[in-house]
Amino acid sequence: MIPAQLPRLVTHSGKFHCDEVFGYAVLRLALGLSRPGEDHVLLRTRKPELIESGDIVFDVGSVYDPQAQRFDHHQIGAPQREDGTPYSAAGLLWQVYGARAVAALLPDAAQGFAAAIAEELNEGLVKRIDEIDNGVSMSGPVLRDSLGLAALIGDYNPSWDSDEANGATAGDAAFLRAADFAAGVLALKVEGKRSRMEADARVLAAYQAGPEPRLLVLETGMPWKSAAFAHELPILFCISPASNGNWMIDTMPPEPGSFAQRLPFPEAWAGLQGEALAAVCGVEDAVFVHVRRFVGAAKSREGALAMAMKMLAQAPARSVAESPAEA
Image (cartoon, rainbow, N blue to C red; front, side, top):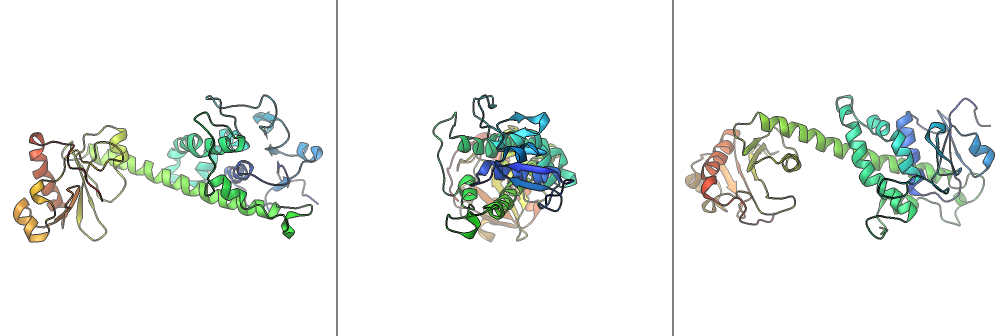
């Protein structure tokens, strides 16, 4: 007997795919649901009368009507993205529930990032699910990856000769395991983007409070180059503490992914350490400069600042995009 008072979430039975599994994970997060039978009912069926009884129906039913909580994409005239990419059930559900699902994964202090994170995921992760499910991409052939999310979720389907593959509840337990996996992937994606956005905000605040427009000083290590590129900051060096107690001096590349530097360390400092480096650069607690001139360190914040300021004093007379380096 299915409890009548619990909300019914309905999708199709049989072999499951990434879009409805991911969509179900999104619904659970957005609606604050836990497990079927506890606070909601999950029906995997193709019976019209059961589909009709659903409070939220996705990837089945041949109806797209957000007001009526119907999210299918198999019917003639199903909705498409602005660029012509057909939506899958995941994409349709994301338009309504994505930001709420993201917000459910964020701490209170980071709720302001929810909308931006949801939009980034919509353009990347969710759109990719739409493309693979429909076999259509506006940017070229749809390429499948055996280690991609869609393939990994598909691997949760029970094999044809397993006990789980037969009977009235065939595949239901596997569907839930796949949904837990999808929710875990989504949580990791959200956390990664939250972390980057938080770092970007802190980088901008540190830059505005910094001693020199070409120098970024951070009081803790964090990703900083994406913010520098996004806001076109004229940074040449970033100073930040390392886990071993030293203070690192990182160079800024001229473009994302480049191994070059806008301003490399002086050639005379390259490959030197300790006393040998201190004698040349004039900073008593200098630790090292990489032979490729893209990173160096001092024992103290003040020492790292002194090394950076000495290099900045030479900046007008030196090229700011030379000496390619490799880690």
